[in-house]
Length: 381
Length: 221
Image (cartoon, rainbow over all chains, first blue to last red):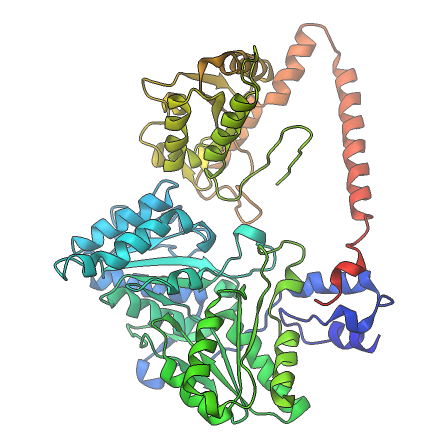
């Protein structure tokens, strides 16, 4: 009962769950599930401050900051176009709102329902020198385009001996859990694309990051996949620099400095681990260093290795399923580079190896409680 | 998304269009397992006007014609693919003609229950009789938004929706036919509607009072 009350009266974070086996069969399952359902889609987002040298800021949520990035891209680059399903009226998440009116329907236009066609079409445009910003409506729908991305986009420069390239292609897609997305509106496919040399994969943790990273992707000389955590579209609000700015790709960021445990995540999960940092400090007196990977591929292994060399303990967390998830790549590299510095085996807290569930989502997620348990394991090893 | 093994309902797909090659596969199995039978069970692969632009539908159609499979490519054309009207997504909005010159197609008034029934009877005879695949387009309309997150009025106007409801509603059509032919009075139909409403309300209460997943499922989570 004590566990139940602790969890149920806890902060309204997306992950207010606890191990049911701990509280036993007598716990009020009905009460728990009601509470879990309410908390499953709630999220506490901690806003950040932009560097002052990026100029004047304006209050924006995630979809507005992404909208701002594309607005700037279309304003500064006359070859830039945006296309995808339902983007003309503003898009299902409002990321393209107002852009068709501002730049015309020949620059912001709808495509038919054909991801393979969208990707191929985008590659063609990019190879001809136009800046192509393609939207895939949900990352879960990206697989018909997989062949185009893997076999065409990623290999164009290599196979043509640098005669051609589709660096001007950027593909954006909403990703991640949203509380009710189930199998086909919640996926995080970054690991599939990390396995393909020739493309970049980027995931922002908030509005300031998203705008800068998206502009960097658009300007980058390589085809980029930009995955946007959809649960943050409205939930994440910050004072975002209004002008043009970029943030570096292949550069992980130390979001919270610490000494005892290194935590690595990207996207929404960075927020979850912020809570874990606080919990570790309050309940265990343990200081955690939190790193946002930002670019999944090519990833900034130097920053992570430097941190783990210092702390000796690593936890990587992501929503995508455990097996073959990107945490596996990070763990493998770290055990190779930091073997003698490790105080405990690398912990991974991820989605389970199942299709993304509907009603079981609260149990599937790598929530703060599961991550906190992993931190305890690392400390007590 | 529902499924029913008993009723040969292989269910809904999350990624629209993906179900169509699967439908061709079902037809192939039916044909293979019912060799020599007078009437082969048929497969109906349903998709919308939005999904009609998926390349894999053509792939399935080509295979089906090549191998003479008993499959109906049934497009439910409700004139909008989420927020994009059929005219703005498809160069050819005559979806029943997507089989080109090699696969025949039938255009059906999807708002007329009797027309739909007749069309499906025809399809069963045609495909089940070993004639291979056919296309079918059921022209219909979507009143509400595509999903809970879609208000449904940002890409079309309210007058269009209410006009459709008034003049083309399929249930109203059945009602008026029954009354015109003298098979039912307005009072009888109202009584029927009351019964149906009560049944739905009962089902809702039952569902809400239903039990949660068994606690054993949640061990070692």
